[in-house]
Structure formats: structure tokens, C-alpha cells
Image (cartoon, rainbow, N blue to C red; front, top):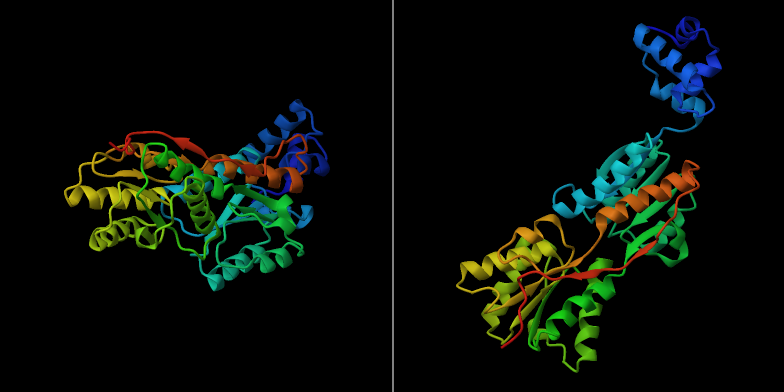
Amino acid sequence: MATIYEVSTLAGVSLATVSRVINKNSRVSDKTRQKVLDAMAELGYRPNSIAQSLASNRSNSVGILVSELHGAFFGQMMAGIESELRAAGKHVIITTGHSEEDKEKDGIEFLISRNCDAIILHVEAVSDEYLIELCKGSTPIYLMSRYVEEISDNCISLNNELGGFLATQSVIEQGHSNIAYIAGPQFKGDAKDRLAGHKRALAENNIAFNDGLYFEGDFTETGGSDGLKHFIKNKQAYSALVCANDEMASGAITYAREHGFSLPNDLSIIGFDNIIFAKHTYPKLTTIDNPVNLMGHMAAKLVLKNNYQQKDIAITHSFEPTLITRDSVIGKT
């Protein structure tokens, strides 16, 4: 196996110069850099990443913990983070927390043990107090899709309350006043905020919140179908259905069509997130855009700025949702 000494001899440069090329240091001329790269290629030399990490006190890896690996939402999030970091020559280590406190903490400890230079977390079960304390440790921690005031400089978040308001306000403006709502799990901050926005829209339009038109789902398609099944069984009047995410809206659309609804004539449905399949449902889903891919890019940029000294990066910490109008909501006649 070739050594760094053999590379330096063949290239006719110092060991320090070879090290600079390996670590992508800009203080090497293009001509010299190419000589070193040619020597590495000729000798079949591969840098030892563990040795590099020990020498530089960096692993050039960033940990990512998300709730799940399946589903378009998390795919868009991770794609945004990974592509931004990969463009900067960094790699990611990914694990899951499954929205359970013990598993989230276990995943965090795993990433810390892998000597990640920083960790980006999408966590829902651990407390704010735990996260505040975690940020006092030696591994930099950043939060994705969550806001904690005490560590706000480390957060990339969405105004979910506004998104919930926009969803319900949009169907009210179409003439709907009997509005059913399928919420996400209320232990999750985003689900709680979206419900608060829904209630604000009702209140501002003098529409009473009706417990009979409320169902707590689980952010999956099954949650959407179960919610619509519940409303049908209760036989309450409603002309619009607001769902706290697109997966539940998709489940509700499927269940409605299977049970004889003509959509959107019999029932208007709106979702939240604007994940990739929203424009492929039938009817195409009106929804609230949650720019999670862009937020993933921003979380990675925050890491690059704070931990890899890429200073000329503008950071946006808070994102605003917007209404995406398609075919699944029509005016009440």
C-alpha cells in the first residue's frame, strides 16, 4: 500500500503540500495540486480518513437524525441537506428516532459517538430542556423543523401556525363553514401549531370549533382514511376537510372515492406540506407549501457557516408557508 511519503517523493513536493491537497486546502497552486493528484493516481494512494480525522480534529461528516426514512417528506428534507453538504465535500451519517424519546436519545448518542463534526436533528419526542442542555456539549447541534427560543440561532423552522391558518382560511373564503379537521398527533409541535392556526381561522370568521368535526390522526394515509371514516359514521354535516399533512389528505381522498364521493363536488379537501405526490392525486391536491427541501439546504448551510468557516453564507432561520391552489377545493354552492 502506497504511503503519503511515496506520494511526496514522486510528486517532488513536501509532505505538508501533499497534506494540503488531501485536505483541499486552497493554499496550493493548481499546477502543484495536479502533480500531487497525478502521483496519488499512479501509486493508487487513498487517504486514510481516520488518520485525517485525528490530524485535523474533523471527521468531515455530519450526523442527521430524522423521524423516519420512508415517505416523501423526509426524502425531500434529507436530499436538501445531503446535496448541500456533498457539494462542500462533506458526508452524512443518517439514523432515525421514530418519534420516540428513548430512540431519539439513542440516535443522538450514536451520532455523537461517530465523531460527527455537527448534528442536524428532526426530533419530536425529546423535550426543549433536553435539547438546550445538549447544545452545551462539544458537538454542535442544529434543529430542523423545530423552534426552541433559547437556542434559536441553531434552529431552522416553519411557521406552522400560519400554515394551519392559511389552510382553513382558504376553504372559508370558498364559502365553506362546516369544516372537518384531521389533526396530526398532538404531542408533535408542528401538529399542535397547525391545529392552533385552524382554530384561529375559525375564530376570526366567527365559526365555532366543533369537537364532532375533529379527529386526531397520525400523519399517515391510514390516519386520513380513519378520520374520514369517523366523520361519515358520526353523520355530521361538513363540506370541506382540512388535513394537517398531505399523507392524511391522500388517505382521505382514496377513502372518499372508494365510498362514492364525487371530489371535489361532494367534499373539498386540503392538505399541508406540498410533498411531491400532491400534484399527482386525483383530484390534484390543494395544499400548503412546506419548503422542507429548501430548509434542508439551509440547515446544511448553517453547519457550513458555523463549523467549517464558510462565512459568506446568508442564513434564513424561519420560513413562511404559502397556499398552493390545485383542484381539490372548490367553492361551496
